[in-house]
Length: 257
Image (cartoon, helix red, strand yellow):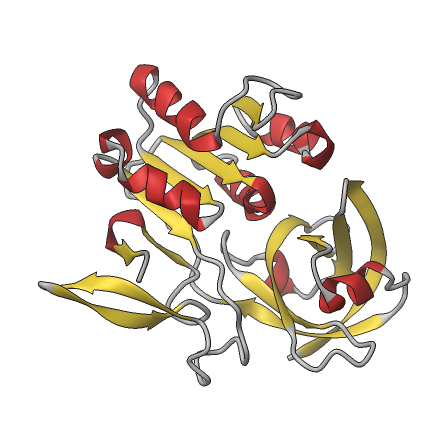
């Protein structure tokens, strides 16, 4: 547990904000895909989990990106610089780079793009990366310039065609894999995107890791609020998204009822 000072809190796109915090060394060196559990204040009782969006070791800061969707994020969007927040983290188990991997494809859907920028920063000097990011429309897209600075290539697509090709991030990534096969895929997005990926052989035949999003209570694995199902033998078992994840192999996750 630690106290982190707000350096800046600014809008990135329509309803999406970036909260930049002064950060200790353990956060600046956090693995990609791990998260911070933030007490947002303002009478909001439960902490809110946010994946690390980017870090800047030179400035000693780390940032999370978030969409304003409820009371907690509404309060957070009004937080002023120099406010001190109570933060747990980094928490969870993030993405891992397979031995010998030289090229990683990042696939983000909507707010799933947020932790992938940190992933792209991590991969610099370790492996080449390409990014495919999908958004509902151009007004929701964010951090594209930062992705371009970190990635070998960037393809941004939208549901309505207002930015890039009119298609989903899953479809755009599948087309890229057909011509330029990566050694691994790191993905973050909604469940529907993961279901679509599980249905395509091009993803099943790759080392593909996905970051899950679930409501969390404690954030450290004690309350079991964020359990998900993963394959085990002929059946399945529960795992904790906060402690055992949030990153899991795509082929192990069981979606649906």
